[in-house]
Length: 179
Image 1 (tube, rainbow, N blue to C red):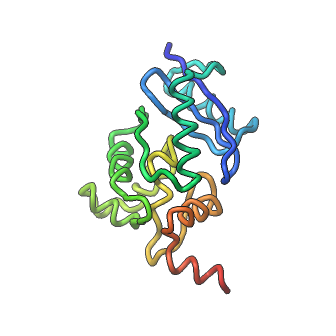
Image 2: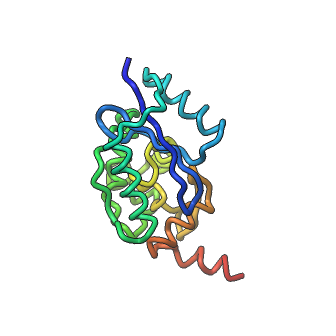
Image 3: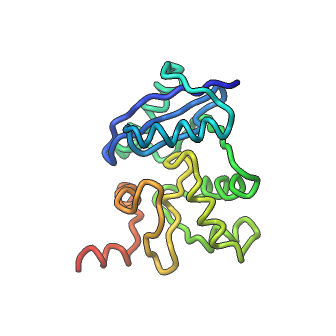
């Protein structure tokens, strides 16, 4: 059975639990509590991993550094190896998310069209919801029609913070906050 290693990181958006395997980063969970660890255990079981609290030093050190730089506004892209686990369709969506540049957003429909499935808007949303490495695969950059902020595993407040950090907060949302 393969082994997962995890570590914790305090970030401006709250605590994160970071998980790697022998290939690279495979899971990022918002939170550091019992509920977060339960989600990680379930994910590990689904993909037939065992969990170790002994992080792989080089992978976790680099992951922490790149995330720290991102939150400080010093990094716009990540150079970490990612090991994605999901269906063929989910992986197709997640790879399309990697093409959304820092500071920009795309709609769910844009993503559906980019993968050649223009009618699969809801399925794209479902794939976003299952993204195991939020932040690195930037599902926070996907917004609803008309610029509305909808759906994010870490909560809309975190999505708003991330888009604000990147200077990509949709105008519609900015107007809603002012009211």
